[in-house]
Length: 398
Image (cartoon, rainbow, N blue to C red; front, side):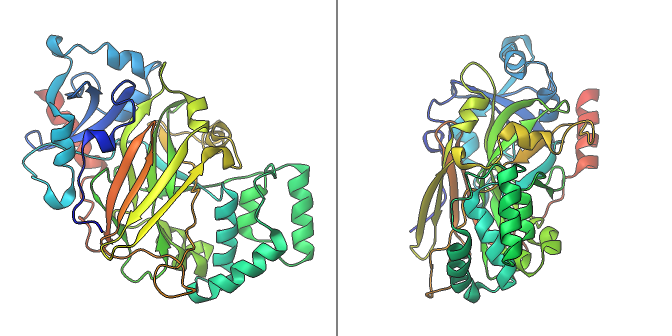
């Protein structure tokens, strides 16, 4: 049973601490706005005197080297506290708004997400579609679908001839689905998860709509991508999903995905450097834990090796000559989890309860921890692009 959400460096940072290059954002109440920061030893260093946004850092040819070159004593960086001090003040329920606290580690980047990139989640999307979001009908439909399709779709290369042959087979049997189309077809599902600047960070509350009765966390590995398409770092994300709403119609994706506090990222972006790179991303194993106020515990893990499309291939789908993001983007790589175990009543599977604490973790990236509330209860999103522009203009005039 969870009494209170607590954050500290041991539980939140990567297993090698600050050996890598870790970038985040901090709310500076005395300045009335956010600052990009880098972690060094026990300290959190504000680098806004050199780089006003995290997006700007991502556009550098070598972000890790540029950040390493910042010398605090020369005025290029400012120590604003210890890591433990900021983590302790980042738990929303206990936050002192007069002191700095952590935000989502991205700012002007477009928040994109890939869907149906793992075989298990692919099957679950088909089930949602068939039962039209009816949680009680899902268990029997799951048995029927798995009997026909099976679960080992991970060996099917999207867009390949074998994928086309499987499509023909399933069409003949009336089992083809729009979710299978994006799962094993040539084009991935890429959608805009949330507006720029609307994501929340570690310690903040995440939201599900109060009228949703079937929903779940979607733990995902998230890539930070420059405007050129170059991947420069990685973080963790929770692509909170309302299965009952998306199951009614895929055209309700926005309603199911984009709500107040429905996108969580963090705790920090691990910048690619000598300690961490794209091959390390491919080897990540991600753990999910849900602790309920009622004593309920869900624990699961999955490996990035089970993804159906390579991370670099997924990045090439939304960014290229056909589409540009001048401030860069982050791309959530799709969920490896689709919890189906019954939480309360038999046959009704998993859904969130108010107060659940969701922990998404992997040793190389640390832990993203959030408490679940209704979207209507979560703090409203009030700090947008115009507010950031005014803040940056004010700081540059100082």
